[in-house]
Image (cartoon, rainbow, N blue to C red; front, top):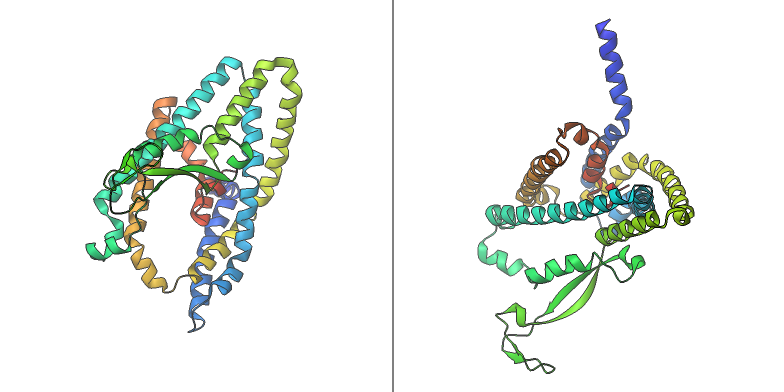
Length: 332
């Protein structure tokens, strides 16, 4: 009798987590496939050959990214628009505060780990490392201001494709003068350098979230007049969730070919894995501390409950993130 109960629980657990298990199996099969194809010939694989192998995986990744915006925006607007107005304001404020707080904590943790472990210096002399490193000119103030600028994108369509960033213009080795203001430009002081606006490829999730929250609050404030728009976003959310479900079921196949293609692009698999060893360790340590200590602690303090059930329910996104190496792909 007990054996039947255990068997029933095991089968039910396997059925509930079938997609997660299949996705992890896709990662393993992808590694095996990539290694076998790599060793099948003495000639190095070209970028085009590797592209042929990863083609199916790239299609899967594109499908996932395609439904991110049509899924997130209507779902968030519909959720907030259907709430009580006082509750919506609290939810929106807490979402922004949570996003900003976790981002700042992640940046601080990353800086501490990289400074202490120095994964890029593993096996490379310090002077050689400095020659190989391309230094990005940026200031802390610009980084923080860019984060706030991205909260309010000038074009909501562009926010789905690009993020704003400030770039400093290197003035050269000698001091110079700004012809417009007459201020001195000192190469040793980045705060005096000229700067320019630039756009980098990538979804501006923060800007889309802010826009969705404001729109949801506006719908709630409009009362009956906002009901038709609310029903529209609810319908779009339901339809896109169905489409997302179809795409998610293709994850094992897509992940398999993505992993295999990435392995084929490596010149020397063993050498590349050796180079990435310290980097891999640093990333895992950072993810462990941030994902299993920092975020659960925040969850526990905010909800006054244990986070284990919530973490267990995140199995599918975690497996998708590991297989695709894309946080955007996990959003659906």
